[in-house]
Structure formats: structure tokens, C-alpha cells
Image 1: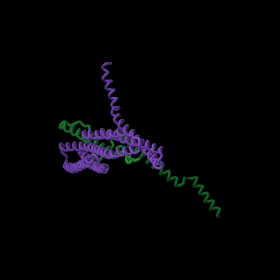
Image 2: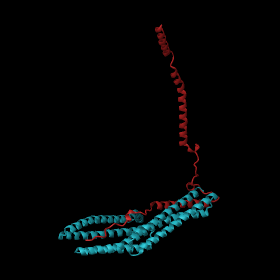
Image 3: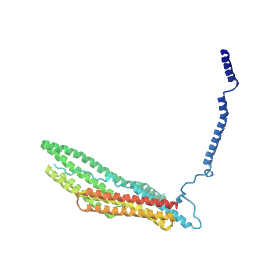
Image 4: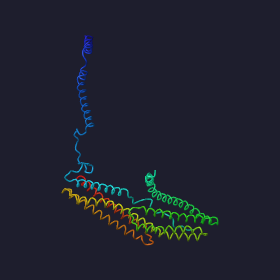
Length: 128
Length: 267
């Protein structure tokens, strides 16, 4: 009796091995295709995004910078309505910037503790 | 070929230009090196003098006396050489320092040359000394003169410091003037106008405080105009403190001006 039960079990397990794959393997096969498809899709979108940003940066909406473009960088030609004012304002701003740069340089580079200027320490009390 | 000669001449001048400007730095570097060399020689002579003096005091032999005489003459000569080379270096620094006005330059060049000539004459006279008591007198002469020299040196250093702070002040003032001119002729929005007015006032306050400190330093350094003072070093340090305070106020002024510039760019 016991031998028959164990034989049945062995036969059953053998049958299972030969007839169909285990449940875990079926699930893995079932799930792997969508996962692969999903990864492939994401990757493709990412590649497209990269291509788009390198080829035509203007076509991709960029987060606006918090500060507007400084006037001195602008090279726009003056409008007909008030050309003189715009040109003189830009040059005045540039002059202010140059003066700022000179002042900054003077403040950074001036040394009031120049070691070379310290007078020599000499023994003036020499006696014989 | 003839029409190329002026071009070749101009090219040669252009190539020489860096050499000409380099020579001024070269001269001051050489002068400083010469001063350091004389200082090293003096320090070695001082060690020899100390050794010879110890031996003479211990043994009192004619040989030790003669040795002390030789070492004594050498140290006095080397000491004079240090002062001569330092005075020459300081004179050059006075010439190249920014902000030193022409009058001060002329006055102090003359004072430093007088001191340098004294030590040159003193050095030459030492070779004619043949005993220790005369050598002691020679040493005391230069000791007395050194007190006057010290005062002149520190006064010259004070003038150089005043020149430096005034040169910096001038740059910051140019910055302020350009800004004020721009703001006066380009009306700003109400909000920015109030901000600029406030910061401009702060900048002016700092400028005023800086100028007061410069005058304070000048007054302190002027105490060194007397021929001789025992407090030359402390008077100089006091004046230097005022110069450094003035510099801090200048930095403050610059900070406010920079803030105003930021508003003007984005107005």
C-alpha cells in the first residue's frame, strides 16, 4: 500500500515534469514581455528627448530663468523711435561695469601689510 | 626697402615695450635682493662679533683684542650697508607706489637720500679706526643717527600707505560717480528708485567715514615729521590702523554700489 502511494506520487510528479512547465516559469514568461516592451518604450522616448534637445533646443520648452537677460548682453539694434537713448544707455551701463571691475580689482589687490617694506631689526647697542 | 624702415622701427619699439616695463620691476627686485643679501651678511657678522667679544672678555689678550677690533669694524660696516640698501629699496618703492603725490615723493626722496648718504660716509670713516674706544664712539654715532633714520623710515612708510588707500578710494569714487550720473539721467521705477536712493545714501556714508579715517591717518603720520621721536613705531602702527579702518569703509561703500548696479542692469 505504502509503496503504491509513493509510486503514485513519483509518477504524478514525473508526469508534471513532462507535461507542462512550473507555474513560476509560466508567470515569468507571461510578465517578461510587457516589461521588456515597457522598458523599450521608455528608452525610445528618452532617446527622442535627447535628440530633440541637441538638435533644436528652441523646440523644447525650457523653464524660464528667474532673471531677465541683462541689457548689456543684448546686441539688438536701436529702434527707430529712440535710437540715441538706447545706445547711450548701453554704453553708460558698460562704463559702470568697467568701473565696478576696476574698483573690485583695486580692493582685492591692495596689500597694506607688505612684508618687504618692514624695516630691518638691527642691534644698535653694540659696544666694545 | 626704405618705406619698410618706419614699420620695422615701430615693431622694434613694440617688442622693447615689455622689456622697458619689466626693467622697473627688475630694478626693485634687484634692490630688494641686495637688501636681503646685506641683511644675511650682517647677521653672520653679528655672530662673529658676539664670539670675538666673548673671547676678548674672557681672555683679554692682544690677539683677542685685535680680533674684536676687526670683527667690530666689520659689523659696523655691514650694519651701515643694511641701512643703505634698505633706504635705497624704500626710495624705489616710494617712486613706484600708487597714489603718492609728487610733493611727498620729492620730499621723502630727499630725506631718504640724506640718511643714506650719512651711512655711506659713516661706513667709510670706520676703516680709519684703530682702537676699541674709537670704535665704540663710531657705533654710538650711528646709534644716535638711527633714531632719526627710524622716524624718517616710518614716516615714508606712512606716506606709502596713504597713497595706497587714496588710489583705491579714487577707483571706488569713479564707480560711484558713473552710477550717480546714470541714475540722475535715467529715471527708475518707484520701487527701485527708493531702493537705489537708500543704498546710495549708505554708500555715501561709508565714503565719508572712509575719508575721515584717511585724514585721521594723515594727522597721526604727521607727528613723525619731527626730526626724531622714540615712539616712531607706535605712531606708525596707530596711523596704519586708521588706514585699515578706512579700507573697511571703502569695502562697505563698494558693496552698496554693487547692489545698485544689479538694479540698474535689470531695470
